[in-house]
Image 1 (cartoon, helix red, strand yellow):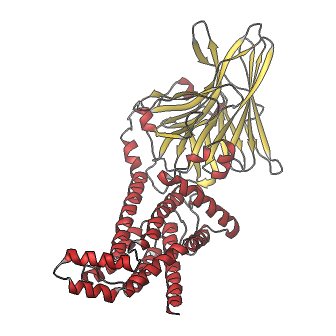
Image 2: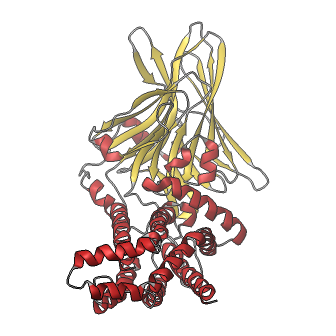
Image 3: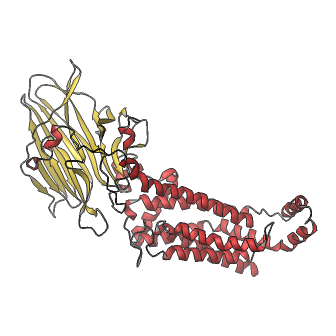
Length: 538
């Protein structure tokens, strides 16, 4: 049994190492990007400067979004999420997209004219016309449509319609192109995420968590790929890929800004590029479209500006829910979250959902746990025989070990059989960590009393202390049923006392939801062990 305890301690330390590295990655990502700061102000182009002219702004307000669209080329230059705050208890809405003198994060879409003779492309920019400068989704309406029109000097008419729906973060954009000339007109539709990476908010409590940023995409060839912004800035990662289905996104820890091209077209190009040392672009454009004289065509694309809500994103585009980063154990974290989500829909509290899910898992694992307890009981029954062999062969350790192993075989006991429940718990433990720290649904979700955020640590350290006590009680019970192999009782007792103490220290800064899971698991384990012992006595 001593070996089981040592294995458990080593497994937990290894698990804690992975958790610590994940925590350090989240905490220190800011310092990596901070090295890329520049002293000069951002000046992408004169067109970007025009974005700061408020006369060109059209404001759109729904129940979840407050968006500013620049009329010059119809890009979304600002987006506030009305259901989220920059910080807990803050009065400021979260700025997901923003444009000012030294920081730009905007979603741009428009048209590019194609010249086959000189193989050139240039964006078709101009002031789009709108009837109003302010649009609002009225209480009795579920849809809001903002039409924007621009006509070139040679008579090409472009119409973009931004369509917003109540309670949703996806925006549908319909494009209408009218060729009123006597010549064929070739063009492309594009959508881009434009972002500078010289300014990051250092407050780790900020929900925006700007220290975690990257580009993600999905295509015919790749189900899901992600790389960081500095990899593009350093020219380590340049994307130019043709695909039929897919999407490309700028992602943060809890939020994403995504372009989803028109799937009806034959193909699209998703790409990344660097405008300057401090500004990068991730976007798409479709293949060249030829429009006959005096004809028109209509197209569409979709845009997501908001939190990484798994169910909504999964329904919007294939693999879009993979933007929620669950680490290398994503195949466990995703089912765990879906189970939690089901329980939350019934219980209405994420903390109670964690408790209920923990109990369900312990019940499912009971056959293995029972086997572990029975193995411990059998080992206890062999204690007199083991003591006899140890005394008989005390001067011959090799012979003593051989005789003990033969005794195990004779009694058909595997001393390592109780390790399987421990092995299974380790990946579940890690998966819970990634689920709690990367699911926006759990951010700032309260449990009871002082626990206001299950994704953050317990501010009064009550749960870690209770968890340590539960582990200590379990160690006490187990120690009365075990025996010594080749280590003194005094040293074994010290290890028994030290292990819960070390675990408590590790858990002090872990998410309170994770500590709650482990505390409930320990308590339920004690109950199960008690029931098995009662049955054995009968």
